[in-house]
Image (cartoon, rainbow, N blue to C red; front, side, top):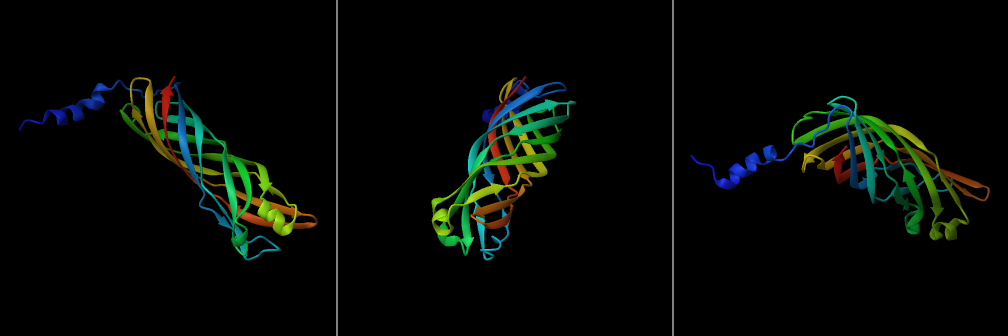
Length: 217
């Protein structure tokens, strides 16, 4: 039986695209759009609001990463991005709505294994370490109006990161990319209102899903 012409072309397409695969010593640079979706688990705001807590909103931001191939299959990747997050009241604090906003800077270094380095479609998996710096913490007007002028501080965090993704050749230098990460980010937030100090434990643990484009150097 003869194949339809379009089916034959589809089957042959990967072989016609010049490979963009990397090898030992190569550097890949990717730009992604990422969704940072916290899967947070938080404590009460102690001692003033034991039945109140916080929820952390999602963020969509750009990301830049650099991947250096130590061998044809093993690579190290440094992931750079920063994201803004609103902290909303829940439980007894639900009526206040937005409690604060904060920026997170979570540089992450992973060690990757690339399963099919010479293929046109190249999946990989990685594991590594994350260090998250929180900055520009700012209490909302609703929180300030409710309990007074409040200073907010979030501790930095160190955690494990897991990663999976795939690269798709576009030509001999450029490729498309899909990537997903789970990052362990645990912090303690301190709210200081005059002489009153409240604390809340926040386990952000976001899923970070990204789509982007990359180039091999």
